[in-house]
Length: 256
Image (cartoon, rainbow, N blue to C red; front, side, top):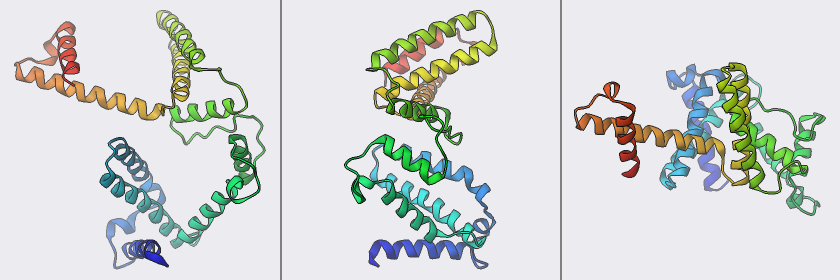
């Protein structure tokens, strides 16, 4: 079986024990639905470990993600529907099927071929080159995926300059909507702007979801520094002017 197989089998057995009558009360009480937030949480903690380039943390977080897979598979097995064996078998078969250029006679990889095989697997007939909307994805990731599909059939700018010009155009249209104080128009134009920004990210090889998360974390860190500066100087944020706050903000920014 090998060491990998032995450790994986041990993991499956541990989960079976945790879910058994002599197991853990918390683990036994979980369902597919109750575990949903943990799967998302563990995925983002793994992303943090990757961003930090921390191999030790990555090892742990990858294990936590794997735990969620085994957890769901055990619950399904108890329901008599499927188990970890079916999960592994389905994954292995899918990987081979989707890589005919490696395991078959296809000459090379192509995004169009990948999407065609996916469509055949799901038994759906694509009515559009961009495919169906996967509403389970976060909005920024969904926009990126749709743009990738459109670009795969040639609907794209030659380079990033076209995407940047579109961002500038959408900013102007958003400004007009804001001035008109029309919430519906603001929502529409803001959506168009975000979609255009995602295109710039795609051209630049940047994941917009990760970029926004990092920007939010940077803001939170700087704001915490501003709060510390204010506290050290006996100042109260609520009573400070915008100019004073901006000065502390620039000081925090300069110290990074």
